[in-house]
Length: 75
Image 1: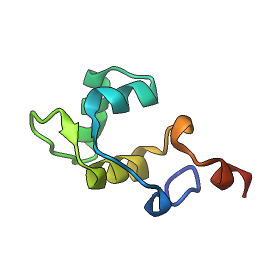
Image 2 (image 1 turned 30 degrees about the horizontal axis):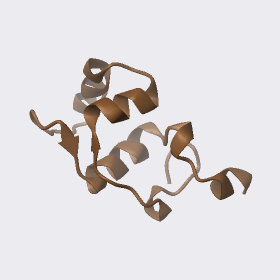
Image 3 (image 1 turned 180 degrees about the vertical axis):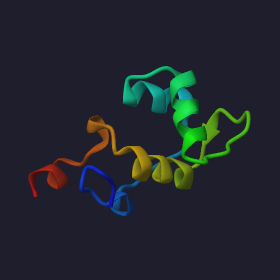
């Protein structure tokens, strides 16, 4: 369960680029990378994060609003 109160384990997540994730959170890639480093994520120079890494990021920083399933919001 993340800070939005939604369980990320129920979401069908796909690999995403750091740029895609940064856009979802409304920050720069540099800011997202800084957040990730502060939380101990080590992705090196890779630009694409696999679905497990995306899930971990969502669990750490919350799910960006556009990715929250409508049914989860209504509960």
